[in-house]
Image (cartoon, rainbow, N blue to C red; front, side):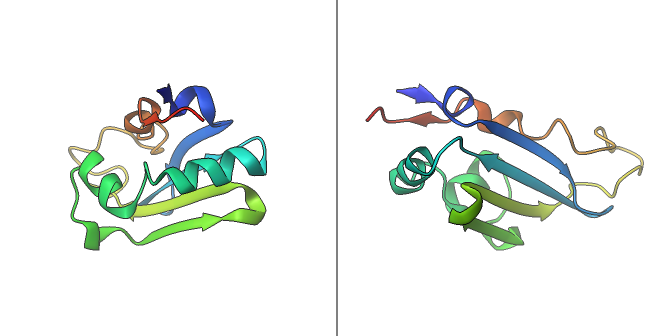
Length: 105
């Protein structure tokens, strides 16, 4: 098995406004992108489990072939800057994705 952090070119998270987080996974080439998508390692259901949210709370789960990437948007656990919020920019939320295991080709 290979980890997503060793397979994808970019894995990041960021704010999508004060009430949403967006995750991007980008691949260096179309072959890697298509292999990852076909592996079904990351689906709406598996993402919901990974982030401990209801699958119906996922706002967007898009596979964008032209960009060789996947974009996922979810509600922030707390509004940006509110009491209890721990990542003002949403830039540390991608960490759960790093260790996803992908079957080797």
